[in-house]
Image (tube, rainbow, N blue to C red; front, side):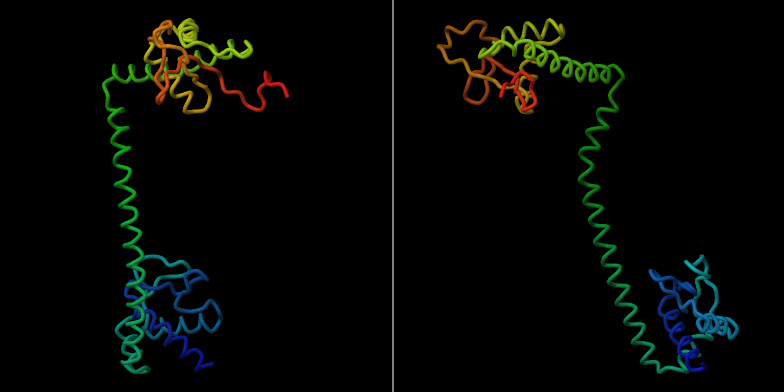
Length: 244
């Protein structure tokens, strides 16, 4: 029993000497302490305090107090073990700490890079938030107008879709959209069509005749190398107008 207790004490003093910040007296599985939470471990820990080998450090431990080695404890350790062995333990502890520091530095650099990447979007949002009240209201009106224009175009195409094999001419679609959303401009109408096309909700079809025969050419929309003049709603598998 005495040999076992002596081994526990030397092991604990070695760990305490290698960690100047302090080690919990009794730890758990994730963070082991200086002594195991067994009867021999508690007895060895009590002996270290009685002999003055350990003292409580500032700050609580996970289980029991955080302890550091005293001068008396270090002298006892050097009496029981060769200085070379103690130094080798210190070197191993130092190497482990260096590895932990390297990981922390790498994590810090990663977080710094992520922070720098966020600066651009955050600055853009702050620029909007810092707008005067009148400009914020205008921004809200523009956002609301986009949603109303989109809803008006889709509603107009939904009314037009029952007509078989007939796409809606853009001038007629523009007039119907304006009937539902009076504030939509021709430019906003075109932007809405482009957005709905990118979302896969609207098909745009080209004008196939001579351009000089095109009625109301201002309503036409250049898409790629084609001049779109007709539109139709994209149908899905659950569209009730599709027959199988």
